[in-house]
Image (cartoon, rainbow, N blue to C red):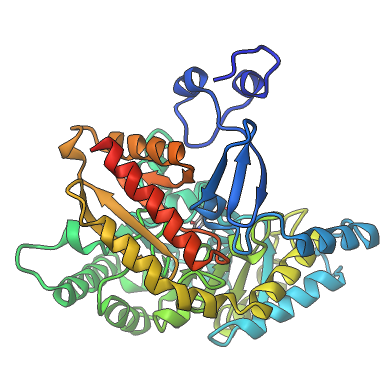
Length: 447
Ligand code: PLP
C-alpha cells in the first residue's frame, strides 16, 4: 500500500471504518482506491483497469459512466433538488416513478412506497406487515419467516431476516418474531440419494412444519429472494417455488419477494418473480432500480396489503413511517432514466441472449479440480471452491482466489469459498469471455 502520509490510502486507513472488513487487517493491507468507471470497467488510482464482475454490489445494471443518468440528475437538481413525500406533499419524479413501477409489476400491485436502500425497503415491509396485522385486529400475527443463507439487509430488523452468521453473531440478533427455515441449497443440504425434486419438497415441508409448530395464526409473512445472492448465489432447486407457494396460500401468509438483486433483468426476465412464476404480495426493489447512481429503493404492495392499512389508519393511528429522502426527486429522476435505458436497449433481451455464454463459461470453471459446484441463471452465478483442498479454514481459499482475480484485472466477490459473478447487464459476449478468461487463469495460479 502507498505509505505516504498524505496518500488517499493512508488517509482512508486513518479515518474510515469499512463494511464487512477486519479493521486491523485493513490497516495492514490498505484499500483498493477506485477512481473512475466506464462501461463494465473501473480504474484504480494507479491506472489499472478491472472488469467489474460484480457490477459494484450487484447493482450497476447500465454500467459506469452513463451520461444520460448524469444529465437526468443535473436537470432535476436545477429544477427541484429536494422535496419530501410526507403528509400529502409530492413532486413529479416520485409520482412518475410510482406509476412506472406499478405498471411494470408482473403481478397486480396497488402502490409504491419509496425508501433509500434494500435494508430500509425490507425493514419498512416488516413494519407495514405488522401495522396491517394490527389494522386487521390480528395483533398475534407478527411472526415472520425467512431462510438460512437469505440476505435482506443490515438494519436491526432486516439483519434479523438475513440468515447469515456474520449478521447475527455479536449483534444479539435476530430480534424476536423472526424465524429462519431451511436453506434451499441442494448440494450442501440434500440427504444421500435424495433427488432435487424430493429435496425441494422437503424444504417446503420444513416450512409447513415450522408454521404448524408456531401456530399458523401467528405467522404474518414469508420473505425470500427469488435467487439467493449474498448467501452464495443459490438458484432454487427444481420444484421449490411450486411446493412453497401453496403452503403460504393455505395459511394466508403474505409473501414478500426480495427483488433487490433479481429485479430489472438479472435473471433474464424483468423480475425474478416472472422467472419463477411467483405471486408475491409485496416486492422490494433497489440496486438496479437506479443502477445505484443514487440511493433509491421501493416497495410495491398489492391491494391485500394496502387495503387494510388505508381503511384502518383513522382508527389505529396514521402510518407513522417515512424517511427524509423517501422518493427523493433527483434519485427518482435517475431511476426513471435508468429504467428507460433498460427498456430502450432491451437489456432484458440482451441478458437472455448472452446468458448461454455466461453459463457455459461459469459451468466450465466447475470442471477445475479445486471447484465443487457452479450455480447460475441469467447473468448471475457463482463457482464454489473446495476449501479443504487448500486450507482447513473456510473462506481462505476464496480470499486468495479473489486476490488472484484482482491481479488479473477482475473484481469478483468471494462469499466464503464461492466466487460470485454478476456483471453489469450491458456486458458484451466478448467481455463475458474476457471475464472468465481472467477467472480461469486466476484459479490456475492458486492451484
Ligand atoms: N436484499 C438483498 C437481496 C440484497 O442483496 C441486499 C444487499 O446486497 C439487500 C437486501 C440490502 O440492500 P442495502 O445494502 O441497499 O441495504
